[in-house]
Image (tube, rainbow, N blue to C red; front, top):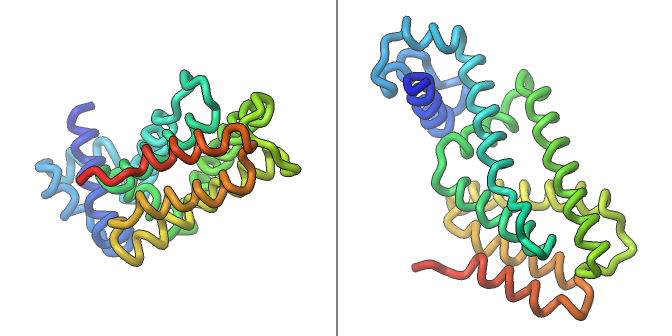
Length: 203
């Protein structure tokens, strides 16, 4: 399992650097410090490696969602901060996102990932509406199916423009827009403060 993990990281770094088409099994094996035979024992094809990276990326991003915060909206803000951090620091998460969006053969894995994400976010929005944190004519389903592509677009544009150097302030602005529109006035200032603190500069 340790060798498999090393191969996944090496594959992710190569996919993130040059994309799926330009990545080679030989380069991945060299980066992982294993023979091509050992690599093929764990992943018979380059596509299998890519799907392994996407699967691990899904697991890592789902793991950051907190279910213990008493404020459902604050939990969503915290999850977005954690995912933004992974996108800046974790090659597997970066590569998984890139692979999911650039190759048609990974569409099934990509659709499943986003459907799970939207379903999970919708559940939290239901709690946020029921708790009174949000006051809106939009349904939890509409909010969830909008927030996920909104965040996806923000991080993709940030990657293109600055290599995600401006990702934290960009996501903070996303939350400012969203909360200004849908937060109940009794909770708005608190939630805006949560978002500002979550994405405050660290340097």
